[in-house]
Length: 353
Image (cartoon, rainbow, N blue to C red):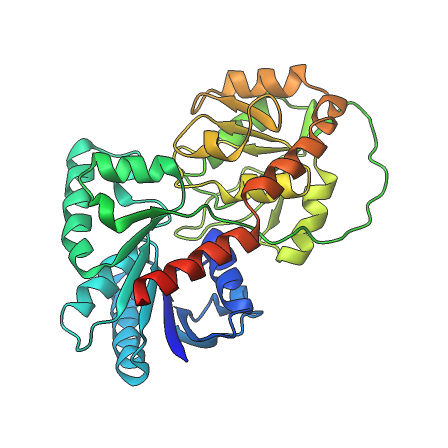
């Protein structure tokens, strides 16, 4: 039985969703996962053998702990495939692999290359150079959108090592909901990390500008920091919730607000649409690939608070409700868990053959 070794520096949010799906029903493989000790509950449904390292944040002691545990497990298990998730783990673990015995097949999924960030051109060039060097120790680089693939090519990555597999999400949880109260106030949902990339500051500006005209529920929290929350009667902070509990938030909302500044995919938008929840999102990165404008949601220019407010004001609960069937259909045609898992396992077989 072939061994697969999944590694991630942090899994809070989307990465946990992906690893969970790839490890729940994979009887043909002996799967091991190395994840932070404080986040292992995120993949408790996994059928993999779970290993942890000590993580206190993005600091040298945490990186050293990850490297040490990675080496220990790798030398003991000798996996045929090492599947690395996100750029920090990609940097640490692929770097270490240059000095370890054996020749495992290495799959790296950046879940957003560092050179996609909203940062200086100098830093982007540096990140691209590092990625090209580390790609020497990589058999396949898994891009989760055509946008990410095209950007990788633009920054000089080897086309022959790149492949695109859209992320998928599990079928929605069954939930019985009460009839929504049509009081004219729009129920807006935000899901994700409360940081600059995800545009949480924009959510707060929208809440302030549309005071009394919408209710905003925020699901998520800090991962790399502890943001200060601006308490208001028009914005409710629910913190992180389980996948099962998440179903009720999607069902109770009229629309998902996703004001990200950059993404490699846009998993939350797909998850929302699986519940029939339309999405109002920034026109950035890969997001135009994961919703159908005017059919399953609407797009706005990055950071354009006025345009967000205009969209939310001119479309009623009823308008958004009419998008439900199209949102569910769009999800089913493109972004199911089954599609993602099958394509990933086909990739495993291809690189091993």
